[in-house]
Length: 163
Image (cartoon, rainbow, N blue to C red):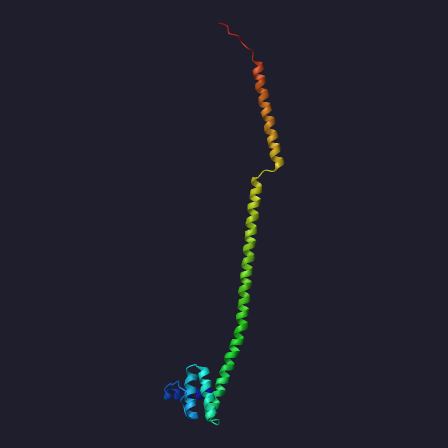
C-alpha cells in the first residue's frame, strides 16, 4: 500500500512538474504539490502544503493519507535522532575514557623515566660518607709517601766534595 502511494506520489509530482508555489486552488492541487515536496525530501514544505490542502478540502483521502505518511516519517526521524543521541553520548564517553587512559599511561611513563633518571644520577653520585673515607685514604696515602721520601733523604749521607 505504501509503495503504491509513493509511486502515485511520484507520478503526481512528475505530472505537476515539481512546482513549489502554494498557488494551488483545489485539494488535489495541494496534494500534488505536497507529494512533490515529499518526494524531494522537503518534509516541512510538504506538511505545509498538506495542511493548507486539508483546510481547503477536509475530506480529501489522499491528503489525509499523505499527512499520515508525513507524521510517520517525522516520528521515524525523531526516533532516529533520539537513538543517535545516546550512541553519540556513548561514543563521546568512550573517546573521553580513551583520552583519560592515554593521559594516565603517559603520566606513568613520565614518572618511570624520571625515576630511572634519578636512580642513574644516584648511582653516579657518591655518598658523603664514601667521599669522606676516600679523602681520608688519600690523605693517609700521601702521608706515607712523604714519610718514605724523608727516610730516603735522611738515609743518604751527605758527601763532601773531594776534589
